[in-house]
Image (tube, rainbow, N blue to C red; front, side, top):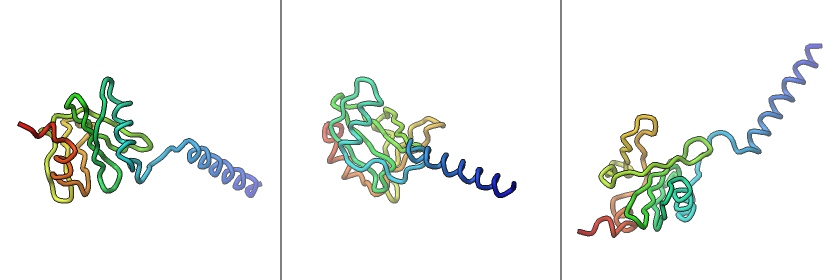
Length: 131
């Protein structure tokens, strides 16, 4: 009888794992690949936002998207989804290894765009850096 219970438990665990994989639940190592995908994600997450350019971190876990209306949106991979916040331009700063965005929200936290430097950001948002 123990072998039957063990077999049933193993079958149930494998079935749940298959369902989780089918539904794409769990951690995704790299979600943001194309700049167009980041722009679409920001447009969908923030009402009235129309992205025009984006820069994605080298690890694909975060991005900055610049909008027509001069707003800046930070994206980060959160589990199997993408979380987005509108940020102030001043929240973006250079750090060793990339750019850091201080969102000011404890639950959202700081976001690091690995492998992105200030020149990458400036090239994508010239309308924000003009005086």
